[in-house]
Length: 315
Image (cartoon, rainbow, N blue to C red):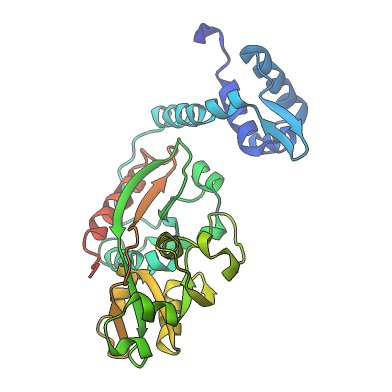
C-alpha cells in the first residue's frame, strides 16, 4: 500500500470512530455532517478490507483489526500533531495552567500535598484539579482531557506512557487503646479483630462491596486467602485517610499502604505495626496519553512529580 495515495485524514476519522463507537457522535466530535462521516467509514472499509465497526447488542463495536490498529493510530496522530506545532518553552513562574490529575486520597495525602507546596514556591499561578478514579475513564486520559493518573493499575491500554513512582508495603493502623495493641500483633489477634476495608475504586466505575466476596477484595484479603484465612470486615471505605480516623475512633484495624499509615507516626493515639502475614507490595504508576507526551509543560510536571516521589517517607 502506497501511503502517498492515501488520504491521511482517514486516520483522524478512524480515531474518532474508534473512540466514540458511533458514526453520529464521531461526526459531532469532528464537527462534520453524519453523511460525511458515513462516507469516511465506507472509504476506510474499502481501504482496509475490514468493516471496522459492526453492530452488536451493545451498540457499535470495533473489529479485532480495528482494536489492534487503535494504539498505532493514536500514536501516529500525536506525532503528527507534535511535528506541526511550534515548539514553545514553558516558564512555570509565569504560567497559569491548570493540570488535571486523577489520584486517590492515598496519593493526595502523600504526594500531591508535596506537589502543592512545590508549586507554591516555583509556580504560584499554576493550579491543580485532582479527580478520583471513578471520576474519569481511560478514554478521558487517552484524549488528553486529564493530564495524568497516579495510582495502581491492573491493566493499561498499550498506547499509554507510564512511569513507576514507587512500590509500597503495608502497615496496620489501630487506636492506642485497641485490645490488639497491648502486645505484638499476631495472625490470631488480627483475625479476632474487626477491620476496615479500604481500596481504590476502579477507574471509571464505582461499585459496592460485600464481605461475601472477601477473596476478591484486593491485596490484603488475597494475602489472607493464601494462608487459608478471612478477616472480619465491619466497614468498607474508598478513602485511606478516613480509614485512619475511623481506626482512631473505634476498635477497628485499618491495613493500609505504609506511606499512608506513616503520616500518623507522631500521633500517640495511633499505633502502627507490621502485618503478621506477608502482603505483596503494590506498585504505584504515573500514566499519561501519547497526546501529551511531548508537551513541554507536561514534561516539566512529570519531572517535578518524579523528584518529589523519591522524598516521600515509607517507614
